[in-house]
Image 1 (cartoon, rainbow, N blue to C red):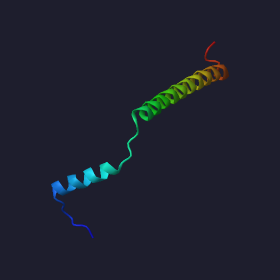
Image 2 (cartoon, one colour):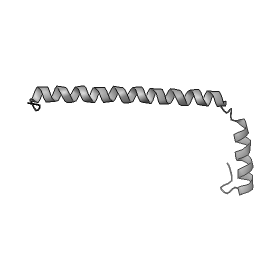
Image 3 (tube, rainbow, N blue to C red):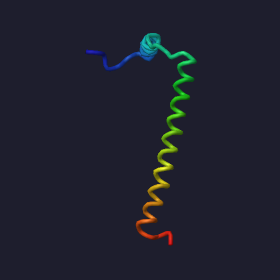
Length: 67
């Protein structure tokens, strides 16, 4: 079982060792992923905006609130 207390210096060494094992994405991969997230966020925004407008019109029509 591991020790309950760890020397801060040892902890930082372990963090650096684990960070060195990480495969970081390239700048191109990061940019492409960011653009994809933004595009899908805009698509979702447009979908929910249109759905909200259509449901609003439907409720006004059903309840006759617009007349």
